[in-house]
Structure formats: structure tokens, C-alpha cells
Amino acid sequence: MLDLNSLLGAVDVPADWVGLRYVRENTVYRVIRDGKPELNDRRSSRGIMVEVLVDGHFAYAATSRLDSAGIRQAAENAYGVARACAGYGIHSFTDQVRPKAIGSYNSSYGLAQDAISPADLNHLLIRATERLKVSDKVVTTNAMARIVDVDSHFVSSNGSDVTQKILAVSADYTAVAQDGPVTQKRTDGGLLAKSHQAGMEVFDEEAVLARCSVIGNEAVELLSAEECPDESTSLVLAPDQMMLQIHESVGHPLEIDRILGDERNYAGSSFVRPEDFGSLQYGSSLMNIVFDPAVQNQMASYAFDDGGLKAEKAHIIKDGILLRGLGGAESQVRSGLPGVADFRASSWDRAPIDRMANLNLEPGESSFDDIIGAVERGVFMRSNRSWSIDDYRNKFQFGCEYGKLIENGKLTRTLRNPNYRGISSSFWNNLGMVGDRDTFEIYGTPFCGKGEPNQIIRVGHASPVCLFENVDVFGGA
Figure 1: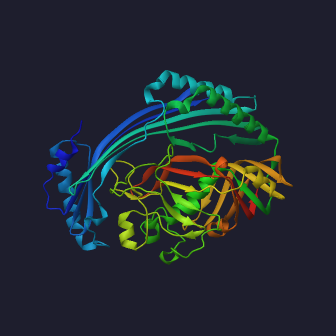
Figure 2: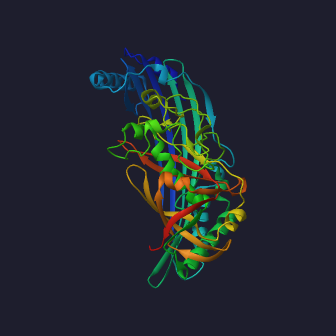
Figure 3: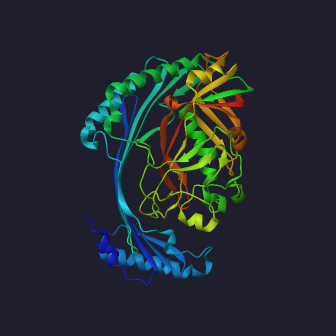
């Protein structure tokens, strides 16, 4: 086993603080298309990020050499970068932003990864594509599995020692149906939205095949469905679409590094200003958004972020009022704003930046039947299909896979190509009803991109069913 503390002791540079972050990540990615293997990929990566604080400035150097000589060389490289950049810093830091952290986290529960053999997993995915083909009108079927096993260890010169182990599983099943010029697609809640920290019980054959039957039949059903109407109306969103709504119109605009301008060149800025915290009515009084890194099974649960800050549940928005941003210790010190422990890196060769993690809308008190029953006319939408939002994370347009017309408090006709548009804060201020705990569902994504150089990271979102009033909905592919 790698002795990271001994490697830390081998570092010999006159830095004010030194940290080592070791990450080993193994990924299995399998795709079956129309009953035939299309991708069978297995990859492994491991290395160490060396971080130094010199005269108020942080610098980094990564290495895949896991011996003392490799670590010393990386530390010297990082020290040289810190000295070279000393005259260009935008803030002078202390090790206050790298608190001493000691602890561990282990997501491993349920069936271990070796509980299902590679052959059995392939067989299941093949069976899934067969079950998806419920009709000759289903022209393409896909089944995919992505399994990521991560071990990390963080030590520092001020005594931090944190180990974290995560098994993240993503799965998706897709049916594409066609009838003449009409083509429709259904997935398992949106592409790879079924992403969790979980075990191999995710691939229970009976449950998977049952879901595939529903997915295939809904794809065929959409072929003869009406187009979504163009009107301003009531909109009910299922949790698998609320995931995307929270991610784009709450998560990204509240990342403090965006608000400070760090991401403007690449991922964009934010409509939120520093003076908005504590006063902005972001949404209606029913809107309660929390950062919650301790939800079992959620994709981005952990005990400490990559700067050593302890991860604890906190209200981001309470009763509709914006309270705190999504920023780690560095951004909090720079901005003077309250934040959370979300200073995260996607790999050993990336420096941490502010990244949303588990960002959830708390349940309300309304049942699903209560919500639908309260709507005289509206549209119910499920499963994200497309998204577009401006650089300030303000004006957006989202599309879903599957819709239902709501008439006189009842779900009636199926709608295809349902879309809606809005402006982030105005949209959330039209939140009229929030589903109860029985409607609350957990989703995630393995592919949230941000940063230069780019970082793709795992994020989790959970939400109940929600009703929004006076929303522009429209059809068209």
C-alpha cells in the first residue's frame, strides 16, 4: 500500500504548506446496441497531485511517479510555479483555507463489484436491448453500464489525513422508435440520469427488464401522440427533469467562482451578484434548496472536499431566499460570502475548483394526486432530452422526452416533443406546489463539465414533483 505520509516527508521545498492528494480510479464502460457489443472499455488511472502554498499563493504539479523522487520533483515544479506567479496573485491566502482534516468515507454498500461477472453483465445488457424492442417500430436499442471505483487519500503538512472510497454506478436503457417521418426516443429517466453511489444490485435482471418494457412501449406510444401545445400554462415536472432544472438554473449560477468571474472565459458567469446573498427572492416561499453531501446512494456524497473542508448539510436557499453560494474555503475567503465544502477535483491531475455536489430540493406537503388535481389545464413532463441556457445561467429552454396533457385535474392525452422556456429566478418564483416525500427521487450525472483544463465530475440532484405556473410550453422536435 502507498505510504502517502512518508512521501510527504520526502518533500523538501521552503513552502508554507504542502498537500498530497492521491487518487486511483478504475472505470468499466459497456455499451450494447441492438443486441451486439459496441463498447467494452476498461481503464485505470492513478497519480498524485502535489500542492504548495508559498507567500500566499497556491501552485500545483501532478505526477504519475509514486516514489519519493517523483514527489520531490513535482513539489519543486509546484514551488517554481508559485514563485514565478507571486507577482500576479489576486488574493493572498494562508493555510486557513486548508484546515486540518482527519477522517474517512466509504460508499460501499450493497453488492460488491465482483458480485456480477463481466460475462453476466454483458448478458444482462444484451437481454435489455432485446426487451426494449417491443415492436418492429423500435428501430434502435441501447443498453449501457458505467462503473467507477475510486480510492483517494489526502495528507498535508498541517496534519490532514483523509481517505475516501466511492463506487459510482450509472446505467441507461434507450429505445428509438420510428414511424414514417416521426422519430421518438425514450431513456431510463434521461441519459445516464440513473447514476448513484450504489452496488451491483442496480443490475437486478428482473427490475431492469421490467423497466425496459416500459421504456420501449412509451417510445412507440409517442409516435402517435399529439405535439405539445404552444401556450402559457401550468407545468408539472417529474423529478428526473427537476434534476436538470436544479442543475442549470440553481447549481451553476450559485458557484462562487463563476460569480467572481473565474469561469467567464469558458463555462460562463452568473446573473447572481455578491450583494444578492441574504436578500434575493430566488424563488417562491416553497423553494428550499440544500447542499447535502450525506445522502445515501446519491452520486456526490463525501465526507471532506479536496481542500480538507468537512462536508455538512446546509441550506443554499431557504423559503425562497438566497442564503449561501456553492464555493469552497478559497472562494469564501476571497468573496466574503458563505459557502459549502464543494472544492473538488475530477482526478489526480486536476486542481480543485468550486463544483456543485449533491444539490437537492427539499420535499413539500403535496401528494402527486394533489398536484395534478390542482391543475385545470397544463402539461406534465418527464425525462430531459435537451437543454440550452445562456452564459449567465439565466434564460433557458429545456426539452423533455415524454409529456401528458393535464385537463380538469386529470392526466389525459400523451404529448410528444414537450418543451418549455423561462428565466431562472422568475421561473422559480412561479413555483406553486412541491411534492411530498413519496414523490421525492434521487438522480445524478457522471458528466458535468467545467474548468480550464476541463474537468468532468460526478454530481447528484434529488427532488420531488413540482408545479410551476404561467410557463411557456411549446412543441416541435
